[in-house]
Length: 274
Image 1 (spheres, one colour):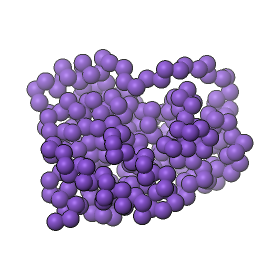
Image 2 (image 1 turned 180 degrees about the vertical axis):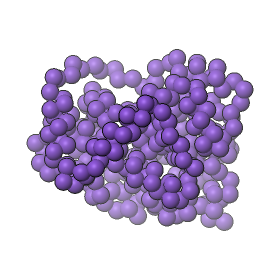
Image 3 (image 1 turned 90 degrees about the vertical axis):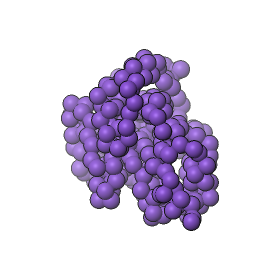
Image 4 (image 1 turned 45 degrees about the vertical axis):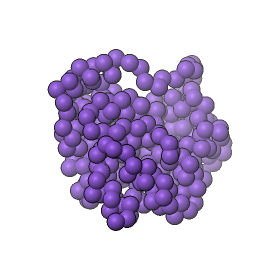
């Protein structure tokens, strides 16, 4: 039995599709309160060790999954493995599907402007700062939305572009999940604090919860998770910067703006598909 067959026979996999700075550490704690789930937030072995190389050489993603990540997961005693990492959607989803894995997905959203500003506060800028180059997609990568003149863009614009690129992937992977029959739950970061939403997530993922779920949810939600230590004053022209960026991308993704707007105009209600 190869590693994929073993994982399919013994484990349920849950991965997130998210930009980061969106409540992944909080979600990890919530999932970890459910019996049977081994919940990890960007654990070792970390996708980041292969992510940057995988952009240019997809075979690196296959090798990392087959030789590193899946053996680690197989060695854990829990029947359910959940990883709340923003890296899975950066070159590993497609190889996982092609290998025969069928993970369940949590599409975790936060408004792109909030994601972008949080990244600026953490000095994590695509193509510019060390952490931005290591962890984030950037306009030089294949398969991303083109951004001509990105070198002249502000740090905020690059972070906003990155947040939009992940929104584009969230839309795409939700469609893939529907076509493949994968359990998929879409949720906004702000709704994680609602116990009913979390319970709906568990039902969609077909994972039973114990009787202490409500009290566990309340105690976990009372704690701030992974907040920014550095707080910056926002400039007054962020909307103008966003408008300039949208104009630069309009010819490539003319419908993306309306698709994203529809997601956030839904009243914050979670959406599920199985």
